[in-house]
Image (cartoon, rainbow, N blue to C red):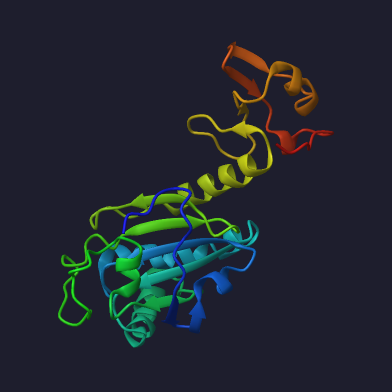
Length: 228
């Protein structure tokens, strides 16, 4: 199964470190980050799970729920969490899925259908493609997919930055330029005419090109707040 941006995130029921969940029900009206791991007790993932735990407050203030996945059993996740806390100072404070039958990894296109039906005996290299980050909106649609190699630790500050952009652009008629971060100027989308822009963006804009109009971030400007 190949997932693309805009597709509905496949629903599933799974056993996690916090009990059984139905993914869509668990998300509710929140945004979600599902990030996956090829195996427990691996070095790069250990650093990632600890750092993700340190960002709990940042995700919560953005109304984002975080959930991890590894193909190993939940009991292993619980033992691994002790190592993660020891190595990073933070123990996972979000549910971790035990995908022992590989069904969710297959459902999300991270493993081929012929990968087998058990995590037992599989190495991290066997599961090297289970290194994805999925950002899911409250509408249950996939907003972001990032796939990482095992040797490269993920940048969860970048995931937060993208979520800031996604939440902003979902509400206002703007896009965000290269290296944008919350508070920076934005781009008025081409679908908005100059005449419409006068109402939507009373702070004005700088037309670098007819199709490239730079404006202050709408929700940071007093008096602005019209949605798309």
